[in-house]
Image (cartoon, rainbow, N blue to C red; front, side, top):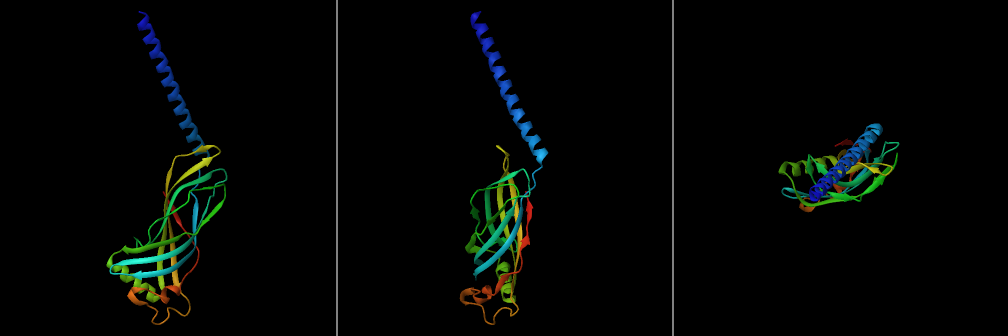
Length: 214
């Protein structure tokens, strides 16, 4: 009888402990939801400030490129910080990647703060469709190249000591490069498909806003 009473008491204690833990989990989840709904954090804004196309080499069919981008991000929230857990940056041309992703260091962005990154992006003999390599060659010769700078990452919201779960962030920034008033220098193409002076004549036209999705 004593053993049965002991087991009954043990079951009651375990049940009470489980109920307390469940209540605690629910309370934390409800608190987080209330904080999130009350503050309604807005997604950070991204702006492409510059893109310098340093080199392009066209293979058959592959593409090697090196570029440096200057990318700015602004936190529009008054009371919510942004934790950039992971940000991978790369360049695409006609929806095909032409550089490998470069990971930016994790960072915290305070209220209304602006963060600027200037990574160098490159890709060596990146496989592309034949028409993409041909189109790049034609665009460079014409003195007008339209690229996209993409950012794929994860962010968290931070309010005081509370930190949200991780959210996906995908950013796309249009980048237009054009030759100056003199156009592309005659005979600017280099050997082995290297664009040479033609690439050097292409300049970033103007800073652009980026689309930010999840």
